Image 1: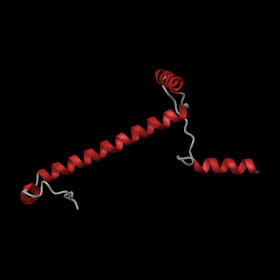
Image 2: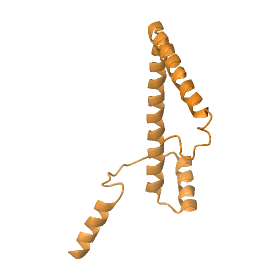
Image 3: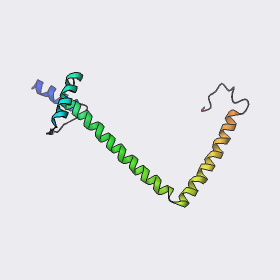
Image 4: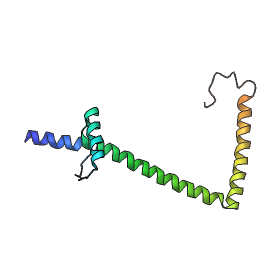
Length: 118
């Protein structure tokens, strides 16, 4: 019973949690590359396949997010009213940034022993 509890605790503490089994057919050239990487890295095939799948899915999510952002930017750029509002906001921020920079560069501020964020 003690060994069974240790096994349950080990499985529950894995960083990846519970796993499902997946059957996969690979072309011979990919299977050969996978076998070679397994031999060179010393990692199990299943770990290499998990890492490759995680990387692929992450890249695809990132690609979809970038495509959605591009569409939103294009929609915003095609709206004359939105463009005018953005230009106005940019001008306001530029004025505020210039005032802050002038204050930071004023005599007496450059030699202050206290950091500007305090």
